[in-house]
Figure (tube, rainbow, N blue to C red):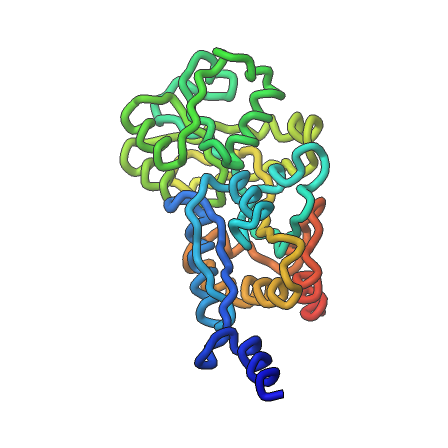
Length: 303
C-alpha cells in the first residue's frame, strides 16, 4: 500500500521533489519580422506567466501551411494559419480544430514606388517572390495566378522567398515585386517603405474570382494610408485562425482560449493586429470546427 501511495504521488507531481510536470505548448508562427511571431511570442509569455503547468515556446516557421502540417504531425501544439490553407479541397484538414479567429491576413503585393507595375497582370515577364515554400502566402498566390490565367511556366518568373529575403531582394533590385499575406501593419514592409519607398498594388478585383473558384473565405479589405504611409488600396484578405490538434485536452484548450481573449491588451501591445480579437468574431472559424474546450469558454462568457 505504501508503494502504491508513492506511485500515485509521483504521478500527481510529475517528478521527484514535488515539481508539477509541465506540458509543452509549442506555438508555430512565421518570420521573426511578421505578425504571427510578434503575437505568438507575446502569447507564449502570457501562458508561461499564468499557467504554470504549461511550458510555452515559439517556433519560427515558413508560416501557415507549415504550421498546419506541424499541428497534424505533432511537432507543434498551437499554430497560426490562414483559413484558405485549412480548406484546401473543400474540407478542413482532419484532426484539427480552432481556438479562435484572430484577425484577417491581407495579401500585400509590394513594388517600388516608381515601379511600372500597377495591376496584377503587369507581373507578366517579371521576377516575383510568391512567398516561402510552406507559407499561406504561397497557397493564396498560386490560386490568384490560377484565376488570373497566369500559372503557366514563364508567365511570371517565380521565386520562393521568405518575407525577410523578399525585402532584401527588392531593395537590391533582384526582384520586381513580392507577395506577403499578413495582418496590418507588417513591420518588415513598413520598414522597407521608409528605406526605399514602396507601393502596394490593389488586388480587390480578384476576391470574387477566388471565392467562385475556391472558397467563401476570400474577402476584400482596405490597406489604409496610416498602415505604411503610402497610398491607400484594397486587397484580397482571408481570416487567420489559431488552430490546435482536435485531441488537445479540453481543459488546456479552454485555458489557452481564455488567456487569448482576456489578455488581448498584452497581445495588442506586441502587435496592433491583435486589437481585432473580439468575442463575437472569434467564434467564426467555420468551416474549421471550434475545439470543444474553446467552445466551452465562449459559452461561459456569453452575455
